[in-house]
Length: 102
Image (cartoon, rainbow, N blue to C red; front, side, top):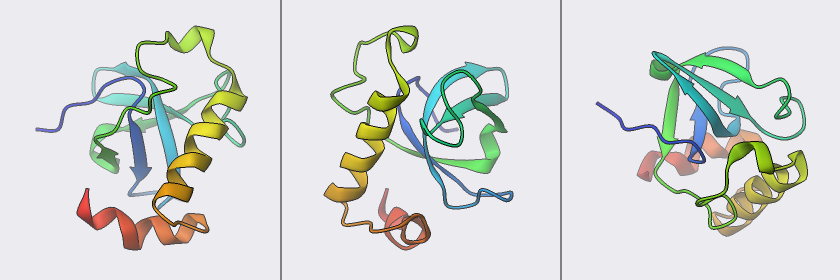
């Protein structure tokens, strides 16, 4: 069973948002709430079943130990942008190819 923590990066594996990169903002039973700071801001996170996401076992330094209510959408966007850049991911569709090794 996968371990989910607030602040971890995750990739959607099912639905119309398949292969989108998010940050886990909350956990509630079998669901997680995901945000990307743009389409799904912190104020309106995406509710998704745990079985429909793949967790990237990284909690970015910017999010480590910081309560989610103290973060802004800009912080989330920066973290996702930095991760994509570090993994050499140019666009959302490439997450599928790179994420197999996580």
